[in-house]
Length: 533
Image (tube, rainbow, N blue to C red):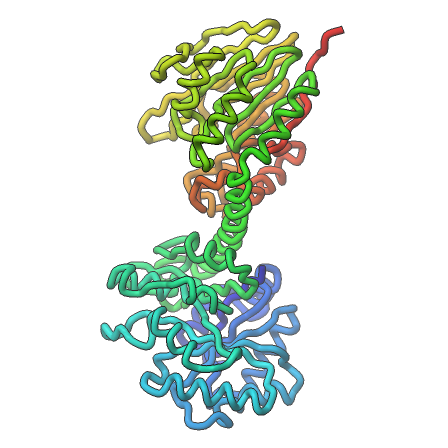
């Protein structure tokens, strides 16, 4: 995936004003800005190229981007459009200098209200005649002066469809779409499947208290819906961050606005791709769960994930399941019946708390007719056995001991949950389950040979910038002194983009704990436990 960032052309002038001045001040120099851009993005969108643009400044801008390994896209303008020759003059200058090849130009429909389709046809025909390597992208805009025409998504799609050329696509502006929805309701600016099919470029920014082009860490922007729709269509264009620092530098640190926004955008893109992949896995539930059950029959000691938060374990001849659930794994009834058959010969099933990805009462009520199923004493479910904090349940040589875990976040309403300590022939495997307070006293002094840790890094999975929970999670894990750490509860497609924990977060943790392993849905791990002689 390619990432981009809009840079005002005025930053290359000695007389900087507005966005150019604020962007320069935010980074302190052109060198600092482009050092950062060269490391963090792939391209720069130069804003704005007009018929009267200073060609020396434009050339300097393109050469600077090349020096730092950055491709260029261009935010063009039709405001002063008269002829195709004059419109193309700045781009022809770059082509003649050998400074461009296959470039993209974004245009506003509102720059030529009544004539927009005619003008676009003219410039596209002109480009065809001269074989210019250019792609135009018409941008949806925020509504100005209550004028619900030419700028909204439906009308932009209609304009593009009237101009008969492959040179014209759509630039989807997430922030403008959000602005229109906030002002006039979602129905006023519909984004259709056909619109997404035509998107070849993007502008991404937040809507904040009536103003667009704010950083992504504040305000509102529909990253999840938009990215998922684009990626379902194999979008491979630029995800371009379009911020206007003159609008927010008085409220937020300018540099931090860019740094945080790029971090959020990259994380959101990775999350969206992970959600699509995870959704595909869940849609083929039995195909991924079946091999785990097959391995369970051949391994003396192992743990396998039969869902993002559900496990089957074997210790010698003892088989147990922890938190099996069919929550949102269609066809649910068929999958539930299949799982009941798979678990029918188990020695026990344990549930830790009442969230749907851990607890399936319909499954337990039926399964409880064949297998002993234990649920916490603060829950009620037919055909199950209640267990309490501190209770020990003996299954042959396996001892299962419950302890009060800490699902409750500090400052929020209490949510009960039991963790489990599994002891087999002198070795312990601890499952604290869904912990939300990594510094809680209840874990102090608790030890494990093997730890199954569920990943959670705060209430916003898009925030990896200065995320304090990474350190807290690693400290929490180290406190158990485990010789082996397996990290689970990842890639659960039933969650939203800011609540799903993926490889992005695993890598962040592994920078501090490289020895930590993932245990993903459909995977198993052999456990180092004493075997019978």
